[in-house]
Image 1 (cartoon, helix red, strand yellow):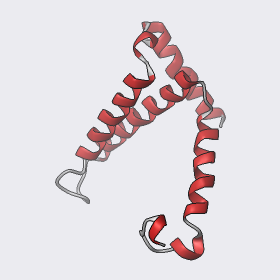
Image 2 (cartoon, one colour; image 1 turned 135 degrees about the horizontal axis):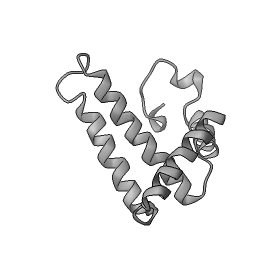
Image 3 (cartoon, rainbow, N blue to C red; image 1 turned 45 degrees about the horizontal axis):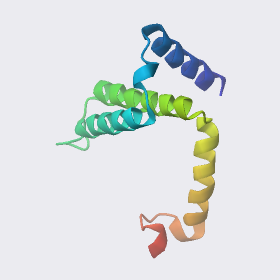
Length: 108
């Protein structure tokens, strides 16, 4: 957790130093998350097994960076957000029904 807080502080300082917070509305950040997720997906466009790990990690970092910025702008704790969603997901996909299958929760 301490490392996540340090990373969030580093991202915040980076943006403040450049006066970029003015551009980081929830809408703009959501667009950026989607764009970067598309670039991450592009790393696997033509091959599921032979991909460039350096490119994958760069795009993964970009997606994560924008997600952390979104949490900052919304004033929420990303750990709390993810834990709340995990609570919901664990109920939707109980181990005894979901183990080893990729079936959507409403079809289990």
